[in-house]
Image (cartoon, rainbow, N blue to C red; front, side, top):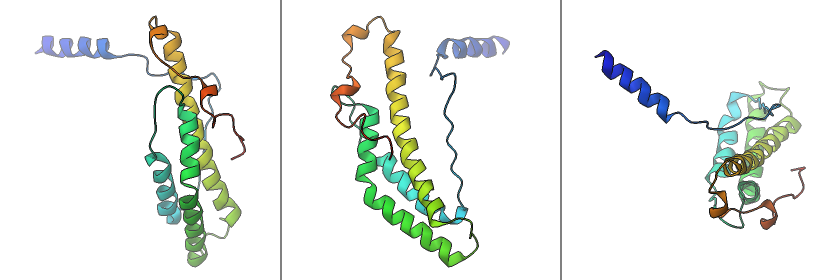
Length: 153
């Protein structure tokens, strides 16, 4: 019985690998909003996450996430409008102004793009340490025309 547990432990140790390297000064995003508008926020975020992502030469995750923001623009505007209507109808959250609701949706867009950028960085770091990296076809950000666009989303 002890040998089975020990074998499981050793196998578990062998399967562990470094998943990601984190920057010395990581960026933390915080979004606070009343639960009453959670359906509107979640609906928009689901739209961003459900967009098709193409991996391969000429594409970056950051660029694909920027395209998702563009594709979900109509859904985002409607979700923001719905959130404001829910808040106005409830009357319980006077501090949650339309400007603050706008900031919630703006922050979601920024987080989504930043996550795409982070995936690109993680892939580049993995390839930098890979002795077979020259055999793996990768794409640089300059191949993706949507990267480097206005950061002020």
